[in-house]
Image (cartoon, rainbow, N blue to C red; front, side):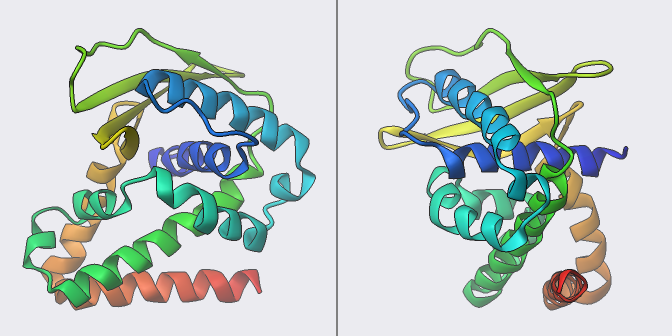
Length: 208
């Protein structure tokens, strides 16, 4: 299993927990938030056969209505695009964010069908009271060696929002940034937008 596949799967784990929460998770402490969401994820996947089967329309609808309020998606997209984000026009930024969101949403369906008997282990939070940004460290435990899974969160008002995920030592933003930079270097920002749009269209057509 390659690193990007693992990263997509772990993002799916987090996203589903946010989407299927039966009650509002305690967002007053970042590690408490991640712990509650992680537990709900495992329980939700085990209980929902449609999600295990990769029901794209169901997952996407839940993501749109439930997940995005808990994720700083603009910052996540900007991190993936890197230094080129500031060079993009407002229209290009909007299109990049939309296509990147669609790309990630569609990875959830395949990833969720792979979730079986995993559990989540929390590590001590290394942060000081008042820190505006923290890293919450966890690991996924199941068959084989535990998988490192860390989250970057920033406090926005009274709530914490996730803006990056680390799998096995590599942050998701860094993983995408390398491939996005190569595409922009060859075809420009519009070329990256077209590439993402083409991939999304192909994925949608294959699923249909």
